[in-house]
Image (cartoon, helix red, strand yellow):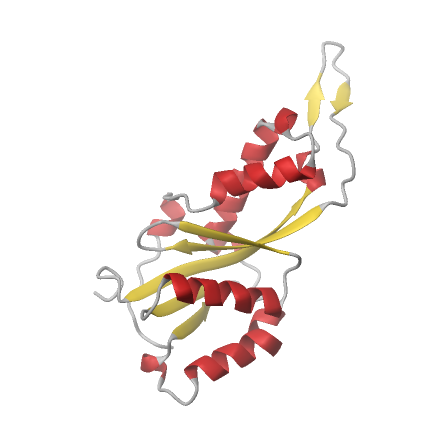
Length: 188
């Protein structure tokens, strides 16, 4: 009930490291010899944090210099600002920096001594080493496939990032993996 009426926001959260080398592809020429499509400077890298709203299917994207607790806290604060005065349930895979350090300190400070039913943000972990459970993984795959399809437009990493942002930011994604989750608001 709280999810459908918007009192509770359920978000699937994940991070992605976009590498310029992700566009490196292979094609076959008439001579049936594999031809590499060259990409300059494969060391260019961008980290993204993404959150998929379970109910609205909106996807929120934010870029960061690296994936760490500081970046995660910044992203969570952005999500809090977007969904003001609502409880948020974050469902994620849980790298160690989500569970310790800055991220944990932020959540402890935010939720304080409140009972779990009154927490502003609740975190639920997917099973360990099971990225196939997280629907955001499918969004990353779709975005990278989009980039590979239009590799010829990507003359610089700046263009790669622009196209990645264009494909993912604030779009709605709805596919079967999302629908397999039916949340019942109950603290664990």
